[in-house]
Length: 239
Image (tube, rainbow, N blue to C red; front, side):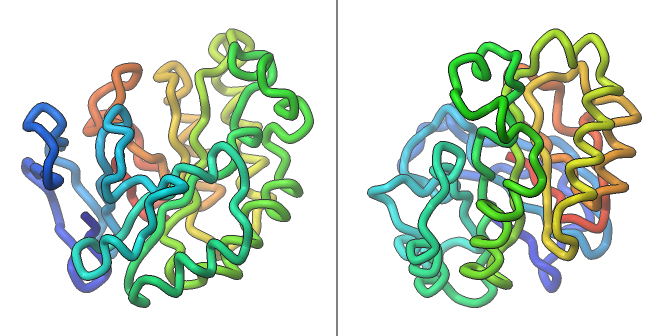
C-alpha cells in the first residue's frame, strides 16, 4: 500500500492492511502516524510472513504478478546478494511508471563486523558503511535500471555489536558520514534493529544525509509512532 504525491494521507488513525490469503494475526495494524503534506507513505507486511506477498520478491516471485493491484513492492533478495542489472530492468519493464520499489541494500554494507552476524559474514569488515562500494554496487545499478520507479533504497542494519550500542553517537556519526558521501537525489531510508541507537544524533545524521528512518514493526523495536522520522525530504516508510 502506498500513498503517492497525488494520494497522500495527512494522518493514519489506524490503518489495517490485509493481504489476500493471510490469516488475521498476520494483518499489519499501524497506529496514528503523522506525515508531511508531500511525503510518500509506504507500508509493508510483517517480516515473519516471509511469503510471496506484495512486500517481497523472491527468486520465484515476480512483481508483474501484482500489476494493477498494488502501488509498490519491496525487494528483499538484494539484501543477500546484488541483483543483475538485466533482472532489475525486467522488474521495471513489468510495472507502470507510477509503481515504486523499496529495495534493500546489500547486507555487507549494514552488518557491523563485530556483531554476531558480522563475524559470520566474510566481507562485512571490508564493505561496512563503505559509500564507494554502495554507490558502485547498489545505487548506480538501481538508479539506472529502475529510474523513477525507485521508491527508496533501504539500508537495513542488523543488530549491532556492544561497541556501537555503548556509544550510539559514534554509530550516528558513521551513518551520517556514509549517507552524505552517497549520490544525492536518490531516496534513502534506514532501518534499525537496536532501539539504543535512536538518539537525537541519529536523527540529526539522517536529516543531514537526506534519509528517512524506516519505522519497523519488529519485536526488537518500539512502537512505530515513537520512532524517529529523519529527513522529511525522503519517503517515510513503515514496514
